[in-house]
Image (cartoon, rainbow, N blue to C red; front, side, top):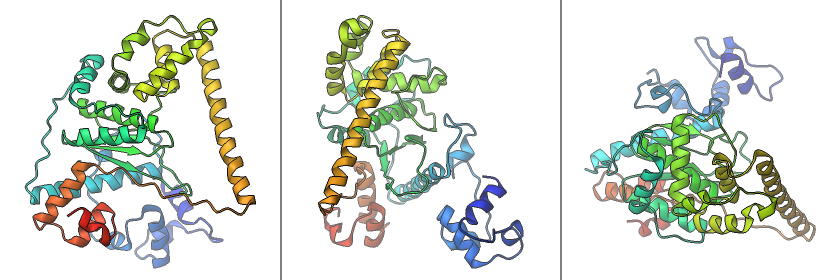
Length: 365
């Protein structure tokens, strides 16, 4: 953000706006610092540190790379990336002190390699036992990646967060993948497969990934990662989809078969239709009709949920929704456990890293 945008943000709610002179002079009021920290959440000590912030490539992906697929990353997204960059540096230090080695066990590929061939290779090495429950499948895939020294994290945003991150996931070198928790686990599974593609190419990216939206302006890397993710999740069904006749009203757009493939791959039905569009197996007009149908069904479901909430409220029934928790990577948990056994971390630090209450500590050590 530029200085004017910054001043507008920290002046929010004030009758008398904060000026450049108030914050960029030799002195600054503590009350202004507190307003600044509400944006950046670094703690007041950060701004009082006389040492200039580091601009090394190791410190942030934003110093390693200038352009991203999503060129309009908001502050919420940048803060999330920064949070996991700091965690990555912390884990790197812990690993060194604990004599742990996160050596890469899968070779690197390039966009000249066939994404379908690489996806089928990856399926043999990484794809877990299929589970009809999408959350369980995601958990199993995260565990499988942990066995290959790839650490996967989820971040969860509360419904009342002001500025939600406009990203679905990202890959940070050398071995960290971060996912945004979605209402749709199929979208999150696809994002993980897509970011696995970035890991295989060793190409960092921060992005919104929606394979259910046709986009012909993707970069070569993004197209490769999308193709890889599709073949990794679809497996042999990819060949069957390629043999389908063109989807139209005459064959009911292959709805029954596509629903069957969706249930057996965790690819969303709309993502499969998008693939058919890429392959010329459905016209743009028919694709738009199918898309509108899915969007209308989604709207109806959301409206029904809202009606149910209102009815419960009118009856005076309180709804108790449990707070969602990220799926932990076994590699992350074992790293923290080893650090504790090696005396690198104490009990308080273990609880903080794993985000658990002290009474739950016995389950982990």
